Length: 181
Image (cartoon, rainbow, N blue to C red; front, side):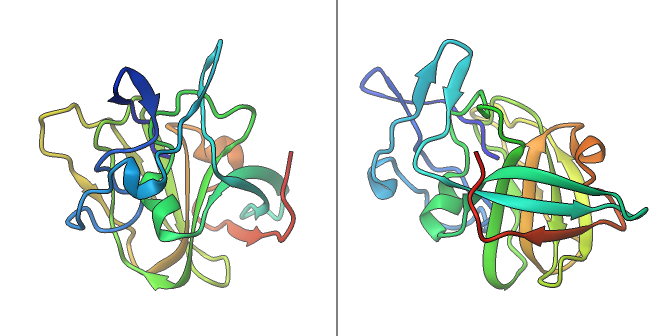
């Protein structure tokens, strides 16, 4: 998830030069480059727009299954935007960044509002690694967060939620075909 505040002409938008799983050295993505998607404002915060959702099953190391509902970022422009400007997940558990082939890109938290945790998984659903990621204040050098090896899926959630969601070492991830509510 990328929780980012981006202002353009006084409107809060999902845009800017922040990366969602693609190497941070890539050119900045502008609001126009992602269709100038405007985030939906609600009383409790800003919800993500323009993303589908997907059902995911996490099987813990002890065999316990847990169903999650995640926003899906499976195209380059969606992965680049992540959850920029978002402050409320609207009842979803987080965001799934999905790649068609093993990927070794790094994530960063440029202009992120909330701290996040991220778990990385390989194609067969096996756990690779996880880490916490802190917001990167504007005007500072942002650290890049890498997985311990190539991955095909990364799940971002509010920092500290990985254990509660079962996204821990020894877990497996199965991505469903159906959207969730």
